[in-house]
Length: 288
Ligand code: CCH
Image (cartoon, protein in one colour):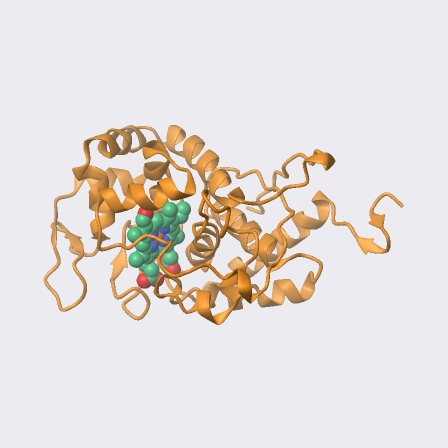
């Protein structure tokens, strides 16, 4: 029949929408976490699954979900992401046909849309790999560094300056945790809503070094309740990056459009989609 090949269940767009709805319902239900949502940490899981990609060797990326295994799950950059992976276990149990690799990315898409962000087209087709495919430590960015490091890391994935700045707008979401990265605090006043506030705050606030025992980070002079990482500040100390920060601070529609395009690219790095099926991307219907 149409939906089956050799007895294997072949999921259709409506099946992926069911998974989306389940993640969205869990996001609603489990609202006692952090700032009231698992959304930000789901976005970070999808990003760290994808951001290991190396264009030279074609290794890493979201195709594989190798963060399930200790060597990669234990990388310093992935500290705390077990909360996101555990959050998704009941979804995997309810829809065993979906791979972890597809589920993590679908959940990132769901979180962005449910937190009032732009529509992110989604294509399934990722396969889980085994422990041997774990990537080496050091492929994800180090927050204590500057503009050269950002370019080194993101060019390895295949991104340009504009794309680096557009991706960084994700820091409108969530917060730093002292027991995970060592850093502390949120970037914006609305960490569970996708906005261009990250760029506005970068430009409009006065930022100074936070005086504390933790790693070097910035705090806003007026409320001392927001933070920026050294890598965040690199986006306004570097002239080319700063031009894009200015554009996104002024124009939320432009940010949404560019963010949707660049995060779709990120989520698909190294994924060998079956081009013969000509499967068009799925547009998930938000639940709100
Ligand atoms: Fe990020 N990020 N990120 N980030 N990030 C952290 C948290 C989030 C860097 C470092 C950190 C992106 C880029 C960078 C999110 C999405 C993206 C934390 C705190 C650090 C440190 C972790 C903790 O303590 O829990 C650095 C360096 C870069 C360099 O570019 C990109 C790109 C994205 C997505 C597109 C999200 C979301 C969070 C919040 C997670 C949470 O648990 O609230």
